[in-house]
Length: 233
Image (tube, rainbow, N blue to C red; front, side, top):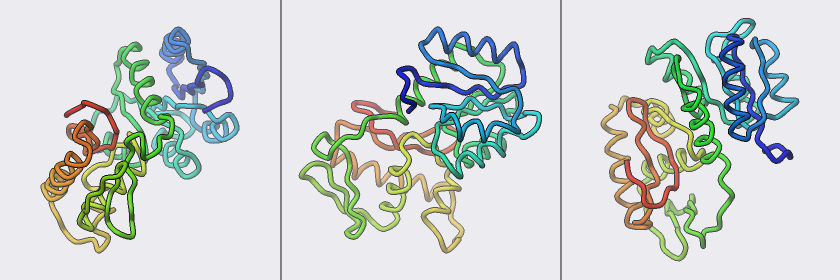
């Protein structure tokens, strides 16, 4: 995060009135906000100014949001919330596959957008915890997972699934992306195969940390890892 006390949010949006409204709501919530009206200068600005979160419109003059998202992800893990009036499922999935942390369809409520900003920042900027505080420790060479003094053993597929999700807390992975990560031999498997592995993995993790929900379903998209005490989907 920036050295300043309040997080810096970059709004990349070509609709001036909407951008101004969102900026006002963000400032009222205690954030700093900057606005870019086109996409061609966005990546350089992000690299130089290092915002804490990016609100990125899909359809932009100069360079579109998906291209910007791809380029940002090649150099930075800055949280990205994509906004668009295009609600086709392929756009939604493609935006998430390129590394967006969330996706909001227009027209949206500025209050809802601010709430999404808070949620994404909260889950992507959680202070590091030690294993003694209940965090998972993945033991790659042994295909085992440790929490404090307790350990469980996973299958190779379960471990690869957990390792992928655990490495990017809060990031949403589609089933297709998870299949690509787990089955590198490009074998043909169905969505239900991933769901079955997730179900078994959840059951094992519940035996290790029964008070926590670690793998969360994102309806119509896939799964994300987030360590939330006393939570359930």
